[in-house]
Image 1: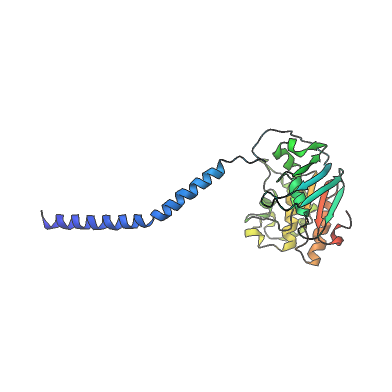
Image 2: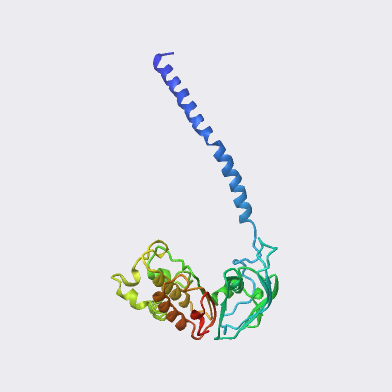
Length: 272
C-alpha cells in the first residue's frame, strides 16, 4: 500500500468520525422534534366543535341585523369554576345601537366573542334574524359582522391592502375603498400622503398614529358593508383629540347598522 493511499484512508476515517460526531450531537434535538411533530399532527387532526371549514348550515345573503341574547350563561372552557355571564338577556333591533359599560373583566368582550360564535354559550341561545346562530353556516354568519377592536391589527402592506384585507372578491373597486375611507374620516389624511393609498404602514402600523390606525381599521370594517357592527372599546387607547375624531367616524359608521358598543367611559356611548 502506497503512502498516498494511507493518507487518503486516514483522512477519510478522520473526517467520517468528525461527521458522525457532529451528527450525533443533534440526536437530542431530533428526538425533541419527533415528539413535537407528533403533538402537532395530533392537534391538526382534531376537528373543533366550531369549525370554520364546515360548509353545512344556513346561508343568508341579506339580513336586517336583529340580534337577541336569551338567558345567556357562559364560562370559558379553561375556567369552568368561574361563570362569566349569568342569565344575560339583550335584544338589539335592526339599526339600533346597544352600549355595554362595566368594569374590566365583567364579560363585555365575551358577549362580542359569543355573537361572532368563537364560543357557544353554556346555556341559552343567541338569535340573529330569529334563528339560533348555531344553525348558520359559520362563514356566512361572520360575513354579516365587522369588528373594530381596541388594538387594530395592521400589516406591513399599503393602506389600500390593509383596508381590503380579507375580502374574497378578485377585484375590489378603488371607489369602494375611497367610500369606506371617507366614512371612516381617513380619506383626507390618506390623500395628503405622497403615495396616497399605496403608502406602506409599517409592521403593525408603526408609521401611523393610534387614531390613524383606528380609522383605517374602521374603513376595513365598513368596506364589507356589514349589517352588524361590533365596537370593542375602539377609542379607549386614544388621546382626547384622536378619540373625538375616531368617535365621529364611528357615529357615521353606525348609521343603518345594528351596533353593539363596548366602552369604558360613558361619554363615548352617549348617542347609543
